[in-house]
Length: 329
Image 1 (cartoon, rainbow, N blue to C red):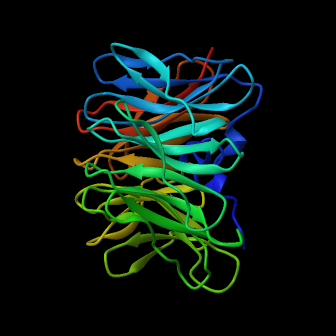
Image 2 (image 1 turned 180 degrees about the vertical axis):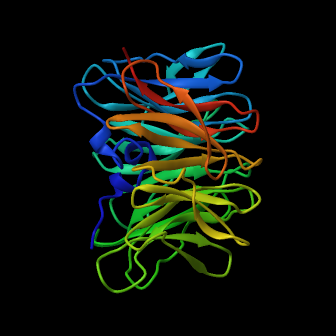
């Protein structure tokens, strides 16, 4: 089964995975949250909506916004400079997914011919096209301190998507897949371990979360059958993700556990820092979903909203600064 690479690019997927909570008529703004300042509105450069996707140790934030023309555009936000558009590979659209502590940004952009390609950006050299695995499209979803980039690309013929690992030394390497052929990568740690999803059998579904080591792809399973995907991994090897409608934490010692709290109808995990603090979203009541922090399974802190009924957290650094996006009043 072919999955569009755009659904595998985190900067787009993060706003689509739980699309029932979102509305095209609603305006969302990127936010930066800390325990001392609460939730700060980062604004937008375009027609209204903006979506933060990643943060580094210095508090630099990346994501995408909707331009006046209706295109997605990648941004970098800093405390001193505010939100700035970092450009594209020659096309009209793009999105930034992750930033490392050196200020290198990974994401996707359309080219002058309209194809979506993974990119690596820095303030000195601008945006570099990382290419593909032989197909037309690719998108980057994660970057580590060494500048290794992970994401998803179409293979020759554009019928199969595979997770990739890119480095300046080796270029784009195919990380393979389970027996079902397709795989998507969503996160990487500083050791180069990659997490994502792949089809474990020759059947079209379900997808299972995976951990890609230097030797093989480990199937992390699911909570109760169905689908799962792994979206982030810290340097201790702790993995977070989602199994159908529930957030999970996976460790080598404990396996996959529901982050809870028990009885909830919906939760989603999207980031974890080196201290093991997890961020995502949680359904308080229908239809209210708020960004939250997990300090441990079944222990959550509601981060609130900028207004309305919806917010979600997409990233956290080791200082406890959290980014995401929220509806406005």
